[in-house]
Image (cartoon, rainbow, N blue to C red; front, side):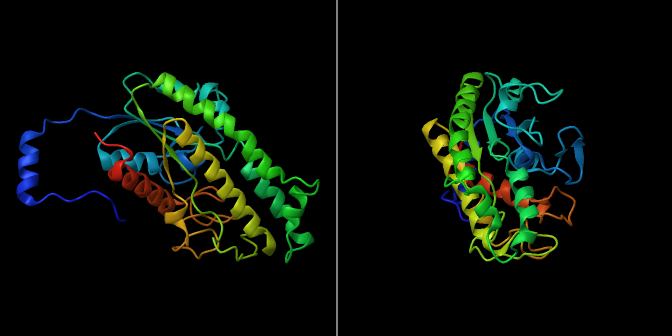
Length: 283
């Protein structure tokens, strides 16, 4: 993946290393939902939160040699950041004045994305060639999914402000959601992707609205935003095994349905690392 960093010459690198003091350990905290935790991906290290040691926070920490505290948890909403999630304490409790870097992936559960997909799948048999999902969610003249995205914006804003309050010296990096559906809107209705042909574009557009809102809130609240959608285009749930980085609604690889598999988590980690290398965070 291309980066804006300029390579040093061998002589320059030697001189730089001789004059640069050994950096201190970077304290990194990972917050967020199942797109950060990596449910089902081996090896699962936290059954309650369905957290993998091969999720993007773990891969990023290993690549950067950072000291990581990963409290990402499947099912998390913005509420779980400042308040408990079941028996789990608030994710924000992992932050402190010594926190250097924070990554955050949140918002999908606030708009009910998994339940929305289940609703869409259940409607497919009524009109598999049409767009029964879009018709359902816009039946009152308002796009209710778009409205949920709008309603989640102040929650993202409050979460970012709370992170800044708890970790005032940290670089906050908001990580968007990868490409779940074919970017060209051409679907693949099947037993493993039971979505009506005309609804793929609608669901794609909803995800893009969500990512755009999250990016806007990150910018408005002094955080960096990492686009994981663009680098995962062409590896959506409609692609064959081995080529897809997102599993279909009936997953084949060990991960949750409609979630990044191990390759998807690697792609997300690479996107974050590249963004950091290109200036989103330097130490």
